[in-house]
Length: 390
Image (cartoon, rainbow, N blue to C red; front, side, top):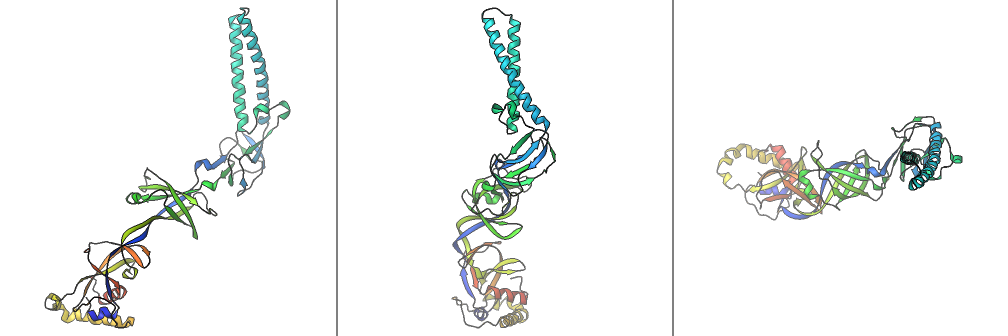
């Protein structure tokens, strides 16, 4: 409770909470992610020994570019087996045609015809299976001839991208399980951020997202939401929101942690002048003018006013004196009696053009007057006088 003179001395001014068109945003955390089709783990189709590694980590590679050369006698043997199977298939095909012609003229036995058919089918399956294996190695089975047999194969990249990891060196023995090289294409890099259920209705496709790397302060990026997940994350009970990275992707790597600010656009939000919001012990408050306490002069307030209240008023004046403020009035309101103010905790929102969005954490009258100038000194006076109950 302060006198009008004290309120004038701190350039106190009253105003109302207003609905203001403010840019609203939502904070969330997440991580960078590359789609599965943009990550390739290159492995060996058969057991072999690494003869050459032709790339280094960080190299840009094109689809079809050779990454590693493998060598093994089995490679040559399988090529020879394929050529042999093709030759036997040619003979089996001719024999089947001959037996078919004889059967048409009722010359051969039915058993001979069946054997020729079975031999042809078996060899055809061998040739097709061998061709598939050769294609896995990057060899063209249709062009393979005896003069082309070699004991090495070139392992190439299946996608355009950057060499992220190399897990082998010259002389390494490799098989068909562990990847030798990982290639990552960051062109489709996106971010997954996780939004709580109560906020998901405010998030929409096309909204802008400002990103900051968790472990790299000072770098900022932008993204645009392209999809919203429909399944909750079991641990956090959040929904994933997917956003494409727009613009420069330099320095971004799959798996990096990010802090995201989702731009929700302009909303009509309850707001007060920024100076009305004061912080104390990490909490934000505004002061609400509750009454002019004329009745307190004769009632219970004066029971303590002779001692405690006047003592508070004296301490408040000392606090004002310490802050060195003048006495020119700034308030447009004419208050003749003591003025009572209530400190109300708020949740601070976005600020724009001198106004700050607020959410009151306890009920206040819709027409409540708010201290829009001088709140800092009221907080100091309250702290000095100990009037935390008001």
